[in-house]
Picture 1 (spheres, each protein chain N blue to C red):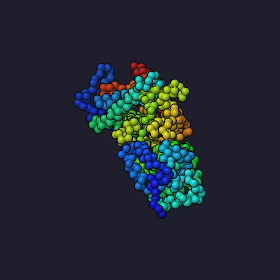
Picture 2: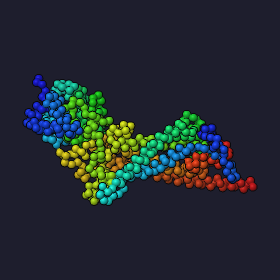
Picture 3: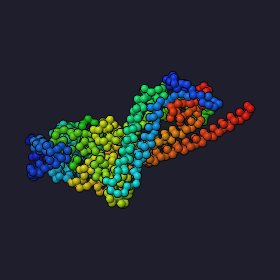
Picture 4: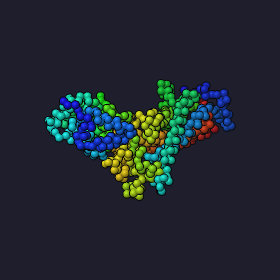
Length: 247
Length: 365
């Protein structure tokens, strides 16, 4: 289970619990490796840029004055969107690769232990915790099971959807026969036509923005209310626990 | 039975000079993107090959495809191609009517079994056993199936035959169905557009008759030579799009200066057609050049995507109309509200637990 400190994540150097000054004794576990943390923040920045530029591709800014030859605003916005898209896509591929070579927690984003009855019970437990039905939260080294489900749906599936539809739309500009068209050209005929793919891609943006609202809120809330660190963990990689009680 | 005439013989019989004939060949080679060397090949094929008969059927349609076709820019096209194909069967244009016409159709099918091209304008309605479109006393869908049985290939003229168009728009009471969903065992060339451009139509027919094979088709069955790029890709107003210069309303300064029509709902960026290169009416103009956005008439289901003057399409679920931004912003606001409420309850709960533990501590002391 995820709430048991597994051997992999306890590298000898890191295993030593930092004894912090204060009344309670705090333990710390190295959870998120540097590539995972780096990916998290690059991905977050890419999403921010993509959502902002994407919004203004669908609803352009007010008209620029002067000659057409003196302006390239829409061109720059689209260029930024495409570049951020490439960064996100390459980062996502790297993150998928890292789920094979990284530690136990690096795998959580891509694999749900749906067959594990214990895990399914924990999902329900977490649901009750968020509905104020449980008094005391549990300790988790990695994602809590409910968070893992949310991550999988919003990020793994959501980003895959955005990358696939995004490259399908990009292929329209890069023309027939381009590698984008060879790899993703099937999307538009599958959906029906180009206009629908644009719409789905825009709905996808709102889907991910909705996730960001939930994600930031829950991260801060759990940082305060749960028994482990959340926000600082994605910066330092270390998860500290606020008490030494078991479970 | 005398051997079938060649194209060239038909042309000469119609009074076309050799000079005009060669001009037609070079124009066609250029239109098809084949390069000058193919001009002689087209001329040779037209001089030597027996012409391929074409049967032209009309289902649920408005005849705009035929109207477009007979206005093809090059006069030869209407004189030659049209007269050649209408000789066989086209119930709108042929001289005969009634039983005589149906007999002509039957005659053509039998004489050229497996050799004729079936061109379909419009589509069959399937509801009520096809009773919404009756040709010669029988449902059109029966005529279509019958004629397609021995056809070499099928051309779906226009958006009706290719996608369904207006009669298949929501809620589609007659269950109008595009041709490729009824005829599944023949090669089908889709030439969408409402109507398709005349030069595109004649180009497709000329290619097939000259080279005896189907033009190269894209993933959805449209000829690549005319449908592989969007209106947007070749639009002469594209520099204004890249510059971020848009018409905000149809009477503003931007409209007078010919800025990009994207913000007033131009569907050029999502529409595959040749309007911005071939243009209409002998290359005179096309909608965007006239100051109106593209309505995307050659795209599947273009009637059901909301306003022609809006950039974001309507999404109709549960009878409510909204666009992606309305739906997205509503969901985001709802989630944001839920987060705020949840945060408030969390804070209250936390305060309550703190008070309790303080009280407990005091008791213990």
